[in-house]
Image (cartoon, rainbow, N blue to C red; front, top):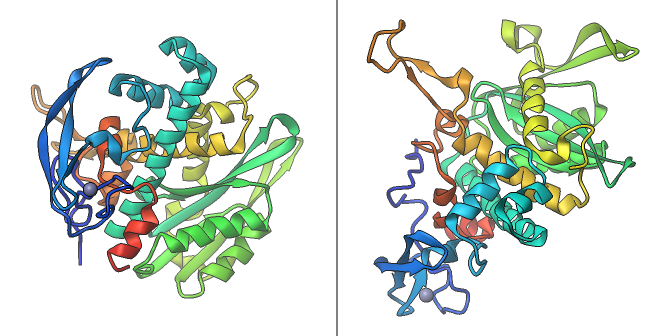
Length: 360
Ligand SMILES: [Zn+2]
């Protein structure tokens, strides 16, 4: 069974429009009938906004009501700029200065965009479904307010599609690794397909967490043990935990993809930039900015290594490559998404409401 990928220009059968007004008796009701009902102008921008009509509740609402940005007095342009600057590694003070807004306003927008990114990502992953074949997990070091308070970001990357599956913030212990794996299993309500390859570094927390949460999954697990003397890499050893050495092909006995990805992240998230003042002051805010970046990386940006060569050679006036985002490669979306598509996407703020109401 394959489910059609999400396309922002048409209504997807799994993501029907619903009434987003919590005071309406037909709030989140999926048997509702929603139609377009004209547009309305906004002072702050030229583009008009779409108005919709809830037929059961007999009232109108704005397309903005589908996102927590509803009621925030910014324009689409400003929201998009905030999102883009947040994913180019600018700190909120810098963004506030560029947009001539208050820093607290930018923090609120980042939070709202992060919340919507999270519910969007979880809804698409759980309802359309992921195909995981090769997972790499790693953690990046960062700190909260002062260097002594360590904050680690645990990350799961699907290496063959370069899809950033999920992440978790916390200490470098089993707790964070357990949460990472627990949420990963939650994102796979249809279970895991076939056979899974996993590579991580030597952190013991992964081994126990994988053994605990992947009991029903067929997998092979390889640890890459790197030995460093005075920060210089001396040896790389492989330690097979589960499975056979032959399960892993030539290019899979490493954690290279995620290490390259870590570099991308350090570049893009101001909280992970090294030796700057844009470090993290609040873990909650860091989480929203990470979600925002996850959306940008998975759904908005084309990934260079995923491009498909159409002609095999460069021919004049002919398009050579077909570019893909990680989400397109994963089969979740049919096109590259814009930030506006995220803001007006008919996905409830708490995705699990929706997941339970559709019978999963
Ligand atoms: Zn309604």
